[in-house]
Image (cartoon, rainbow, N blue to C red; front, side, top):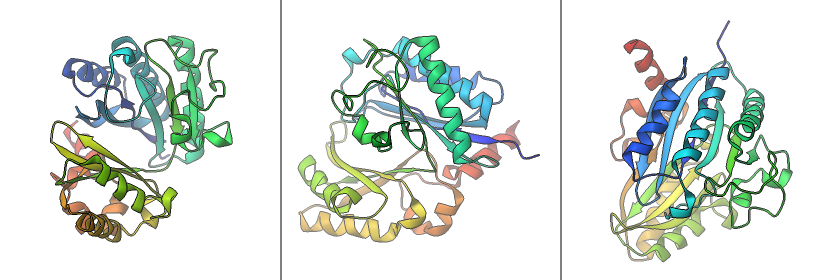
Length: 295
C-alpha cells in the first residue's frame, strides 16, 4: 500500500532571528516520521518558509506544534516587514504528494485548524481548497487589514493579541518565484507586477506584487505561480525582462523559495537553471530521495 505522503509549507513571520527560526525547525523535525526538506529566511520580507513532508498524521501534528511554537515566540506587535502577514504562523498550506489527494489535504487542514485553536487559542481562517466560505478561496482577500469582516472559521476572536491568526489551507503545488531588478524603485516593480499578474489581465495563474528590499537596495517582483503546467514560464520571464527594459531597468537575478516538482523542471529546465543557486536538490522528488538515502 502506498503511504499517503503530504507536504506542508508553513510561512512564519520571522526572518531575522536565527534562534527563533531554528526553534521552529526543531519542533517540526522532532515529530516522528517527518522529513524537513529545507528552510529559507528573508530579512526584508521578515519571513521564513519551512518545507517538510511525511505521512498525514505526522504532518498534521508537526504543523500544529509549529503553529503553537510560533505563537509562543513571535510577537506581531513588534514585527515589520515588506511581506503582508496576519499571523505569527501566517499561512499553513497542505499539499498532496505521492499517494494523497487534494481532498486528503482539505481534511488534514480542517483538523489542523481545530487543533490550533483548541491547544493555543489562535483563531484560524481556511483558504483555497479548504475554504468553508467561498470568498476565502483566494488568500489575498482574507489577508488584508481587518481580515474580510467575517468571523474566523475556528475560534471566537478575530485575532490573538500577539500571534494574530493562522491561515490554514489546502492547495496543489505552488512555485514561489521572485525576480530582483537592478533598480531600487519599488514603483517600477509594482508596475511590472501589475503587467504580468492574472488579476490585472496578465498571465493566468500568476500572482505578483512589487516590493523594495532594503538589505539589497533593489526592487523585487515577488510571484506565486499557482498552476505551473498552464504558465509559459519562458514567456513570463521574457515579459518581465521586456517591461523592465521599457521602464529603464533590468533583471539582476531570479530566486526560488522552497522546492519545485520534477514535472515543472522537465517543462522548462532553462527557466529554473538560471535561478540563483539552483541545483537538482531543489526538485522535491530528488530532495526526498536524498533524505531517504541518508537514513
